[in-house]
Length: 448
Ligand SMILES: Nc1ncnc2c1ncn2[C@@H]1O[C@H](COP(=O)(O)OP(=O)(O)O)[C@@H](O)[C@H]1O
Ligand SMILES: N[C@@H](CC(=O)OP(=O)(O)O)C(=O)O
Image (cartoon, rainbow, N blue to C red; front, side):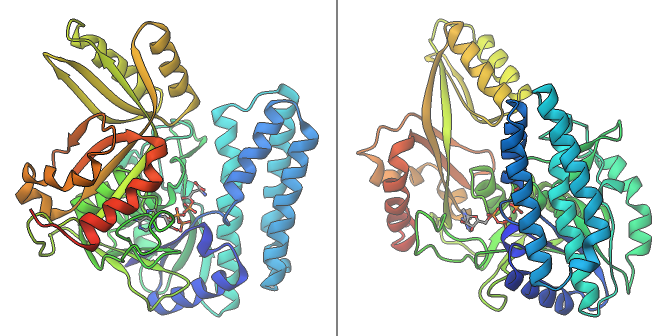
C-alpha cells in the first residue's frame, strides 16, 4: 500500500491537478491513499479573512472569503467539475461564512474556531481531487481524515495521539486493500473533544507519514514543486542540486533546521515504521527524486549534502552567576507557548538558549522574559550544514566554517545525531552567506 501526498502547488492549477491525477493513476493502479493540501494560497487567505474578522472588519473578511470562493469555482470550472463538487462544496463555503461572521461579531478568532475554519481549505481540495479522479475513471472516494487522525487537541500545533490513530485507522487498514482509492485532507486532525485541530503550517507532509505508519504503507510519496530534496533552498541558491538518496537522520536534520520541503515532524513516523519515503516533482514526474532511507548512502568523511536555515531566531543569554534553572524555566515556558528550541547550553561561563517563537503566545513569553531582565537578542538565523559525512569528522568539520570568519557568529551547535553542524548569524547575513557556504562546502567540497 502506498500513500501519495500532493502539496498546495501540486493542486493549485488545472495543469497541476491533471498531472497529479496522472501520477495517481500510474502509482496507485491497485488503490491506495491520496492526501492533499489546500490549493496554494488558500490557507493564507483564510488566515487573512480571520484576521480581518477578529478586528471587526467584516467587509475585509467578506472580500477575502469571496476571493477564496471565486478561486475555487474557477478551479472547478477549469476542470469542468462544477456540477460534481457543488453539493459537497456549498456547505463548506456556508460554514466558513458563518465562522467568519461569528468571529467578526465577537471581534475574536479563538484557536479552536480558527482550526475549524482552516479545515475548509483542505476539505475543498480533497473533494475536488476525488471528483477529478472519478472523472478520470478511477474508483476514488473522499474520506474525512478526522475519522482517524486523532491528536492531543492543541489547536494550531496539534501533536498526534499515536495509539488513538492506530485504533481509529483499523477500518481504513481493512478497507484500503486492493481496489480502494481514497482521497483525504492533509494538515487536519481531531482532538479528544471532537474538535478539529491542525498540525502547524506545512503539516500535510506529517499527515501523510502518520497515515502511512497507521496503515502499514510500504511507501509514502511527497509530490511537490521541486525535483526532490535539494542541497539548499533554491530561492537563495538557484543552482542547488537534487539529492538522489538521503539517510533519515540527514532528512530529519534538514527539515528540523528549516528546509520547507519536508515538515519538521514528518520524519518521526518514518523512523518508527521504516517505510520508504520519496520526494518528487509533480510538474516533472520523471525528473530527479529523493529517496529517504533508514540506512546511510556512502558519504566521504566531511561530505556535506545540504545546507538549511531558519530566520527569526532569538538568543537568550544568562551570565555565569545566574542560576541555570532560570534558563530551564525560560525554555519550558517558551516550549509550552509553541516555540521551537534550537539550542540550550549551560556552562560555568554562562548560559545560552536559542529559540524561535512560532506563535503569538511564544512571542509574548519572549517579551515578558526580556522585561524580567533576561538578555533577549532577536534577529538571528540558525544555519545548519547537514551530511552523514560529518559523523566521521565532527571536530574537524569546524574548518568548513572558513567562509564564516567575516561573520559575527553567535554560537556553534552540534546535534546528537552527529549529522549536523549549526551556528547562528544575524538574519540580514543569510542571503549572502547561504550561497557562499553552498559554493564552499557543497559545490567544491573541502573534505576534512
Ligand atoms: N533543501 C530544499 N530542497 C527542496 N526545496 C526546498 C529546500 N529548502 C526550501 N525549499 C522550498 O520548499 C518548497 C517546497 O515546500 P512547500 O512549498 O511546502 O511545498 P508543497 O506546497 O508542495 O508542500 C520548494 O518550492 C522550495 O522553495
Ligand atoms: N495548507 C497548509 C498545510 C500544508 O501542508 O500545505 P503545503 O503542503 O502546501 O505546504 C499550509 O499551507 O500550511
